[in-house]
Image: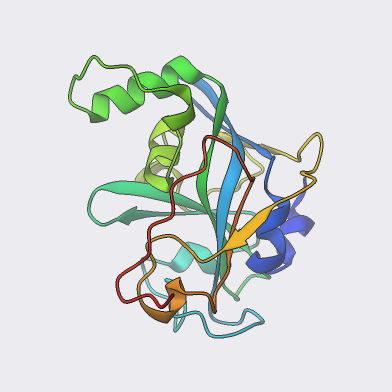
Length: 213
């Protein structure tokens, strides 16, 4: 996988990321995620319909500035005052679209991911099943050790990141509305969530506030 792959907009890139392996290194060690669920978000300058669910739908701000970088960078944000989420920046520099990494399977560094998740639970000794370690974008970021301060705006093709294409592209993918997105952006007009059917790491669908059926 190379930077050219991300010059396309997020709608084209997102389904092609399923099955890819994304690694993040740290002093604790390397943790690798096999991506099983993603969502596309389109912003200023991206081709396609206006996306009211995107952080970059109207303009560049201090918060979303990384979305306007060269393709192949990380956009990390703090969500709901609770957890971080990581997106892969797509589209040429100056335009804005990105792929939210919603879920995956930890295939390397599972014990590191386990300890990070348990620390968040404030010392709970109950181990987290492997299929749940990186189910949901907040758990993805926590298992990988990703934070906004340390990782926002970094190049996906330089340490501490590593990204590899799938060994075998999935024969089938599922498509549907995005999870928890409010209003029309969370409805069937925006079927911009992509996932591997039957994979136990994929998060459960939750309809956003006032999202149409």
